[in-house]
Amino acid sequence: KYNNVLKYLFHVYITYLPSYMLQMYVRDALNSAMDEEMNRDNTVFLMGEEVAQYDGAYKVSRGLWRKYGDQRVIDTPITESGFAGMAVGAAMAGLKPICEFMTFNFSMQAIDHVINSAAKSHYMSGGMVTVPVVFRGPNGAAAGVAAQHSQCFAAWYGHCPGLKVVSPFNSEDCRGLLKAAIRDTNPVVVLENELMYGTAFPVSDEAMSEDFLIEIGKAKVERVGKHVTLVSHSRPVGQCLEAAEQLASEGIDCEVINLRSIRPLDIETVQQSVMKTNHLISVEGGWPMFGIGSEVCAQIMEGPAFDYLDAPAIRVTGADIPMPYAQVLEDGALPGVKDIVLSVKKTLHIQPMTDTA
Image 1 (cartoon, one colour):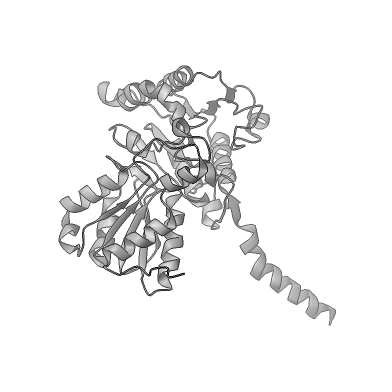
Image 2 (tube, rainbow, N blue to C red):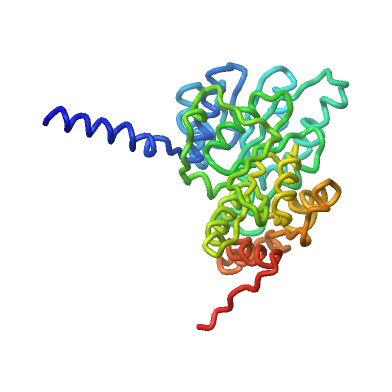
């Protein structure tokens, strides 16, 4: 009898414990990616405001300073232009810096180094100079931080040749994309999301490998569907999945694509989906003018999938205004699940149910 109990407990342990163990917070996914790459390659180092002794403003770099010391985890002054320029110079000299912006809104102070120095030097030197630098930090709207701290820079940096730009959604994305970015010989912009740092996601055994990489330039189909294609990146991917679950109860089957990479853009995966579903909706937290959704829609219009569309493509975006400070106005300025649901019904010509209460 005692042995039977032990066998039962062992069965429970093997069957159920992995589902609890293989959960990882986004901040821990980023932390482990940097830790593994710094351990693998001693030319990799981290620099930025409060990344060392304070463990990072969002605790993404927790423990790295104690493990690697002052030479490889470097607290900088509050001067983005200065330390971004130092990072670019270090990359040109053969090191592999990870340059953290406390928020990408502050990268505006350093954009000359990101665009003119990092992105263009390989081309302007005839391929003689490589700049293997990673610029990373939180991007897009957070909560209650108003107009100057709430912008999405995916379109800003995605516009520039010479840069690679990634925008992870979940923990697996963060591990695989950040590790790939650090190993890349090109400058890579890694756009994280502040509101996602404290969110936990399941991760596969494969993703926990030190050799796990996600190819930059490849999207992922997060949910297979047949009626409409939802294309998004970063936090809005979760909203698309939530909207898809809600619509499934009404018999509407949504395919959800997580772009993962902004530049290069995996338009082939979007095309294949649109040629199956015949409908396209892009969802993003940034402004509507010249955004990621605009580029996706333009490339679909110019490519083979256009003839498969049964309705015009629709963009769901943030409002075309500076972010308000008041919470009720901030909520109204950002896209939500309800906006996605209404857009899906619009493109499928389904009359939304009216609230008669």
